[in-house]
Image (cartoon, rainbow, N blue to C red; front, top):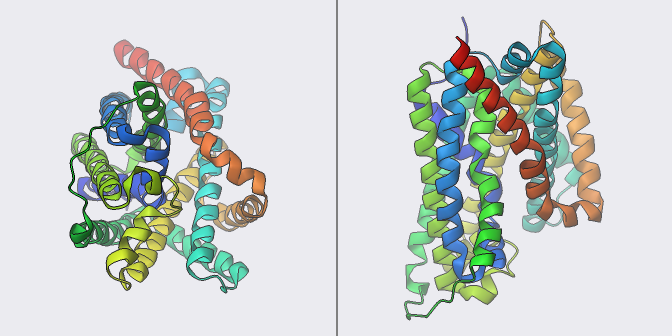
Length: 352
C-alpha cells in the first residue's frame, strides 16, 4: 500500500521545516540585521513567501502527483531536467550538514562534557531508524514533536510576562536594514514549498495539503514575529543581538527547569527535520539515478553526511560562512532553479 500524508501532517511538517533550526537564534539574527525593524522583516519576507509558496505548489500539483525530480525530467528532458534539479538537491544536502553541526554545537553548549562522537553516532542511528519506517511514520513523529516544541515556545513567552519592559519607545526604522533583514528572513519562509515539491506524490489531497502548508507557514511567521517582540521587550535591542541563544536565555530567565524542556524539544525538532530532509534527498537521488530501491542508500548516505557535518563542525571557516550561506544557497542557487521549474510548470500546464 502506497504511503500518504494528510493535510494535518503537512501542516506540522511545514512547521518542522522552519521552526526547529532557527528558533534558538532567530531573534539575535533578525535584530542584528534590522535592529528596530526586525519584526517588519518577518512581515515583508513572510508576505512575499506566502504568495510564492502558493503559486509554486499549485503549479507543481496541477502538473502531476510525482516528485519534482520526475517532473523536471518530463518537462525539460532527461539530461537537462537532471541538471536543473541537481543544485536544488545539493543545497538541501548542505543544509542537512549545517543543521547537524548546529545541533551538535547546542548540545556542547548545554552539556560541555558530553562524548560528542557518541552523540554523532546516536543521532545518525536514530535518523536511519526513522527513514526505514517511511514517510508516514516520519510525519507522525513530526506532528508529536513539533506540537510539543510549539507548546514550549508559547510557555516560555507567557512565563516571561513579568519581565516585559512596557515603556514606550520611539523607533527609527532604517529601511535599508529592513530590506537586508527581509532578504535573509525570506530564506526561512521559502523553505516549505522547496521541500514539499519533493513530497507532493505523498499528498492525500493536493488542495487540502496546499492550504494546510500555507497555514503552517503563516503560523511560523506569527511565532517568529512574537518571539522577536518578546526578546526585544525583555532584553532590549543591544543585548538581544549579541546573545547566542536568546530563546534559551528567555527560558532560563524565569524558570531554570525550562532550559531542559527547551533543550529536549529543540533537539527532537531538529532530528525530525533532518529526517524529512534525508528522506527528500534520498528519494531524489533514487529518482535522479532511476534506482529501483531507495532504502539501500540510507546507511551509506547517512555515513557520508555525518562525516561532512563532523568536518564542518570542526573547521572554523564554516561557522563564519554559515551566515551568508542562506543568501548564497537560496537566493543564488535554489531560487533561480525554482524560477526555472515554475516557468516550466506554467508552460507545461498551458500545453496540456
